[in-house]
Amino acid sequence: PGTGSFFMLGFILLAGYGVLKATAHTKLLNFSSNLGSLAVFVFSGATWWAVGLAMAVAQVAGAALGARLAMRVGARLIKPLLVTTSTLMAARLLWQVWG
Image (tube, rainbow, N blue to C red; front, side):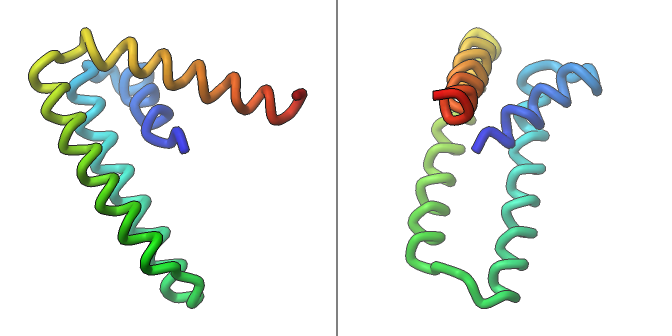
């Protein structure tokens, strides 16, 4: 969890992309890494097809909703969500280590 946030921050900070362009490129990288993971798990025989398909449907629905919102509202929505998500993820990781 959170890979997309790190990809997005990398595109913004390292490549100098704008928020919308970084978001679009992040979707492609995240999808590619998911396909690579699927190939590894299928090859190893450790694939939970029902869970994976349910998660894929939910991910596609969430990505479609997010893309529509990003196109309609733009960076006004994406930036606060990115900061909030990253902050909550960091807090959760710190809680797991020290909580």
